[in-house]
Image 1: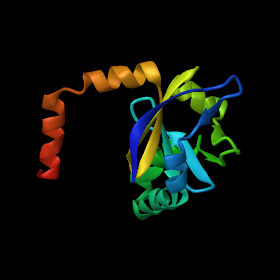
Image 2: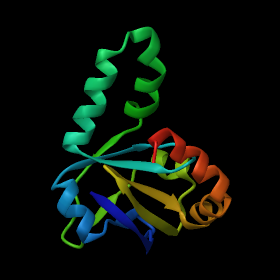
Image 3: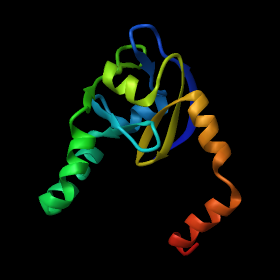
Image 4: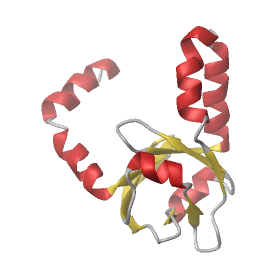
Length: 139
């Protein structure tokens, strides 16, 4: 399980450090793709395969937009010896990443956010919105 949030700087080449605890769960090779709310999703090979399998099980008329969104700009990445991955320019542009990034663990995936955008998102989450979402869990 991926949990916690970590602040990092992206270097001029577009490399971001993935926390060591996350690399243990993600493995030697994993996937980065466009996510929701302007972030990037980081998925292990097993989670990536699970996503593919779910979309293949859907009728193409229902899944084509999802397939285009998640797969067209995705990148297979391998951390270097310092635990950094190189984010392709199109993914950096999509997520508005420049220098300060937040890597957040959200259960079965990690997310990479522009730190200012992450702060705005977390500040926008009120007790009411969280309580409303929790009703889906039957908590």
